[in-house]
Image 1 (cartoon, one colour):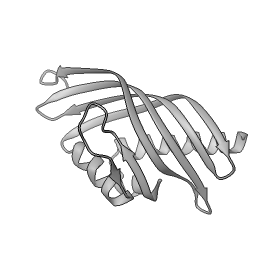
Image 2 (image 1 turned 90 degrees about the vertical axis):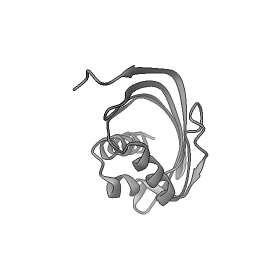
Image 3 (image 1 turned 60 degrees about the vertical axis):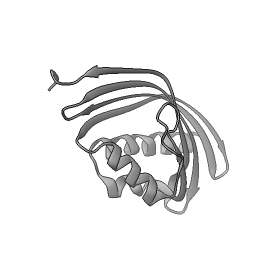
Image 4 (image 1 turned 135 degrees about the horizontal axis):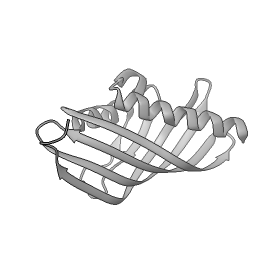
Length: 139
């Protein structure tokens, strides 16, 4: 479990880093080909199936934006080559000439381990708090 814990936390850290630095190839490499991405709560965005569709949806939602994603205090359950993880999360997204969002909630995830490491197979985002503000005055 200790190796899996370390590997999963490093992989999730890489997820946040590649997302916020817009390394779309590196971001995609962390996902299973048949990933299920569910960010529908509070957004109306339909559940997305498949790595290419997931990356495209996230990339388009962050067009003209800067972001910082952080995850904390993971609850990790490993069963062989599959893991279920709940991460406490916070994100900050600032759109150019638009609002800024600070969100707090949880990522509910399923990871699968293969020869090339852990891949994200399913992610569902739940939000506890969403704070919007006018970003015109922010740098």
